Structures are given as structure tokens and as C-alpha cells.
Length: 239
Image (cartoon, rainbow, N blue to C red; front, side, top):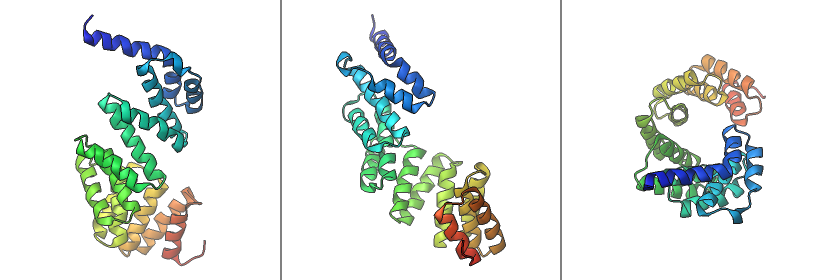
């Protein structure tokens, strides 16, 4: 048997032992998938199967927002995994968790490891940019969002976030409006994007347009503090 067929058979064996959990995961039934994976007796699994199990446990915990548990299993894949693309995915997921949990330096470490390996993508630059944005490093964030858009010119997240920075800082309000409009056109049901567009109108001096869009954003997401704050600034009304 040649090595390619041997590899295929090994993957099939892994799939056979974990197939029910993988099926549930692909159906986006994260809770049931997690319980299925946790029910496995790890002593009965070989090293490849345990690595596969760690991978899916890490993803399930991430989907369920149980980030500390997710880190344990994702780190196992990153540390000992041999599949380059899977390691890449897990590093990106680690970076995402670190950003969400405000561990920005750790997020940057994971992302820069990926960048130095040559595995660049719009997701990589988008996440790096967001990490910079959270640290109020606006110039760096803009540069990274520019790189994101070079790779994916229709990336709505990059358009929205970059547009907001350009408007909020007054760096380029007209471009901010173009970017925010395009982001809203891409995802018209996003209250966050509509809020950015309203704020860009406010920064451009178009107060009536700003009020219209910000009120629409607040109707869609009435508990969002940032939207409330923006509308209050624009209207002078207490909400």
C-alpha cells in the first residue's frame, strides 16, 4: 500500500471513531457535539485520534463561548499538530479568543507568528487590525485594514472599522462615508455598521442624515451603549 492510500485510510479510521461528534459539529449543534466528544475514552484512542479530538473540543468550546476550556485543547493542536493548515486555523482561533478576552499582547503574538510563517490572509490582517484598534493604535489599525482590503476588497468588517476610525479621528471623513456606506450596503441589517455610517455623517456635518441613521441603529439594537452615546451627542437628547 502506498503512503497516500495509507494516509487516507488513517483519516477514515479517525472519522469512524469520532464521526458522530463531527456530524453534530457540522450541524452546528455545539452542545451535543461537545458531549459526544467528551464521552470518548481517550485511553482507547491513538495519537492521531486524540489530536483530532482535541481539535474538535477546542472548536466546540470556542463556539459555546467557554474560552478557557477552548484554549487548553487548541494549544495542544498548535504545540504538537503536524497539519499546517489546521495549526493555522487553531492559531487564528487562539488569537480570536485572546482579542475577545482582552489579552491583546497574546493575540498579537499568535498573529505575528502566523504572519512570519508566510500564511497571510484577510482574516489575519483583520484580526491584527482589531487588536490594534482595541489598543487605540489607530494608525497601525488603518494600515492593517488597508492590507485586509487589498486581499479582500469587499470585506465589510474592514470597511466598517476603517471607516469609523477615519471619521472619528477626522483623518478622512469623505472616504469614511464611502467605506461605511459600502459596509451597510453589504450588511444592511447590521446595527453596528449603521451606527458607523451615522457617526460618519455627523463628522461630515450632515446632522439630519446622522440622526436618521443613528435612530435606525438604535431601533435595531436599543441596548447598545455606543449607539446610545452617539445619538445623544448628535441630538443632545437624553435617552
